[in-house]
Length: 240
Ligand SMILES: Nc1nc2c(ncn2[C@@H]2O[C@H](COP(=O)(O)OP(=O)(O)OP(=O)(O)O)[C@@H](O)[C@H]2O)c(=O)[nH]1
Image 1 (cartoon, rainbow, N blue to C red):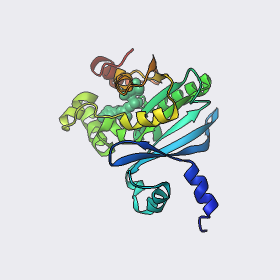
Image 2: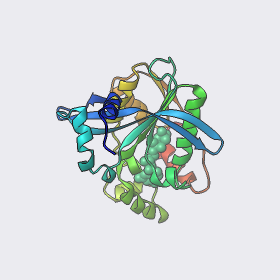
Image 3: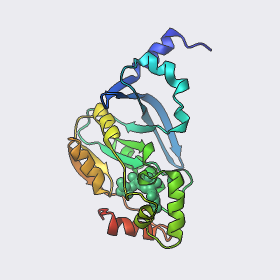
């Protein structure tokens, strides 16, 4: 079926350009209505997805380029927004790094799946908030393929930080700049971060966004991930 002018206009109305660099804009699409059901938990979020595009492109050109952008070969990030995110005085925000093994497979080697689902519940209980799902953060920035090797090293006794170093990576190479620009485009008031990671708070403050501090999210601890979580606390500076 051909796209009609009405459909094209409707999509263009849901597209926003957020300046990133001199060469690139972030193109944000949304809100898209997204009803979610996970066990007993049900909620309807406003979902926004984004990708970077050439600065010179118009909205129509972005749509025309979709089938040559190879979007399935590089994942896009997105955010689930709940409530009156732009205006409400108190909003909870989670900056969640993608974890293919924990979030999708339910791996017990980390606490990621627990944190993702729990933060969605916390946002809905709070009435307002957003969960950013950051697609270029797999394995704290080393990628899934490298993470599989890091896991093999961890099976031999290295901790999560040592395993990254052994493969030639820094422990944590994640950047929050792109997602913080998207956050700024959705809300200018202070937010409370759901995190145990002080680096995430520091990134928000370094970007010039004001914060109401953080709420910790510990839980989902088990015999398999105990050592991983202990290393986060002892070596990576995670707040108890
Ligand atoms: N390299 C590496 N990455 C891991 C390992 N276990 C989990 N991860 C990744 O670590 C990231 C965890 O991200 P987050 O849930 O945002 O966790 P965090 O930085 O500890 O911060 P908070 O959860 O907010 O406290 C995900 O990208 C996982 O894929 C591991 O053993 N090695």
